[in-house]
Each structure stands twice: as structure tokens, then as C-alpha cells.
Amino acid sequence: MALYEVWCSHCNAPHDSSMMKGNRLSKNIVAGTSAWVKSGENSGEKWEIADVLSRCGSSVTLLTKTDNGMEKLRVIDLDSKHNTQCLPANPNVTMDMTELHFTHEPAILHNLKTRAAKKLPYTFIGSVLVSINPLQKVPEPP
Image (tube, rainbow, N blue to C red; front, side, top):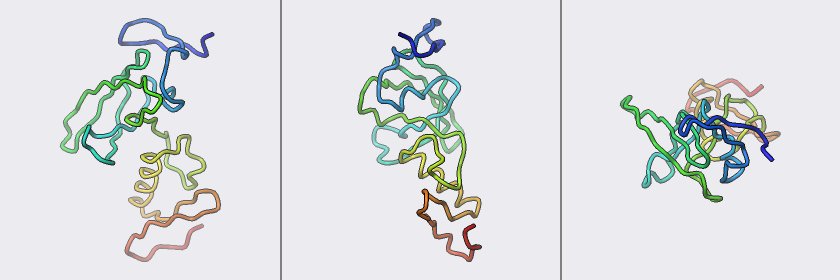
């Protein structure tokens, strides 16, 4: 039984969510959202944000932008239960990371980096305070 229907822009046909294989996070990667992808096969631990252009079954088409502004089209197969190449992105940066929709490595690092860039070095994970050393004086956390 279909949980919900997703229109596939690749094959121009509707698919139901039961056709979307992969890990539980990959089911949140649909056209019109953003996702974190590893930069390349030898990227080590570098992640970059991508726009999800389309999804057809377990195949997803992504658009990334390089540091010099060039756009790159990528197609990733999410059919592996151990897929770690493509993870859904959170819609917002939060002060308390327990409020993040998705808690995986690139989501947590992005949240901390964005808050530090805004001169907000203190971020909570529930009752735990995480501090990014800004190498300057900052006000006490709220």
C-alpha cells in the first residue's frame, strides 16, 4: 500500500513511497528539497549542499555548486541500506540541536559553523552546551 505519491520528473510517472528504497533518511530526499552529498569519491569527510532536482525510485538527480560558482549535476543511487553519500538537509539552523529534523554529521557541522559565523558560538544539545572557540570575547550564553 502506498504511503504517499511522488511525481517523478525523470520518467514522468507517479511513484508511491514504497518504491523509495534505501535507509530511512533517504526517504526524505525528494525533488524540491536540499541534501548533503560527499564532494567526490576521494572527498574524505567533505560534504556539500545540493538541490534535489528529481527522484525516480532510488535514483536521485542533484545540482551542486563548486567554490568557484560552477554548477555540477550528479546522479546518486540511494538503493543501498548503508548509503552515506546523500543525506537530507535541515530547513533551519537552531540554537538547540535537539530541534534539528535530521541529526547526522553534516547537519551538526553545518549548524555549528553557521552559528559561529554569526558570532553565536554557543549551541545546546539538550542540556549540554557546545562552544566553538571564536578566539575573541563573546557574551555569556542565554
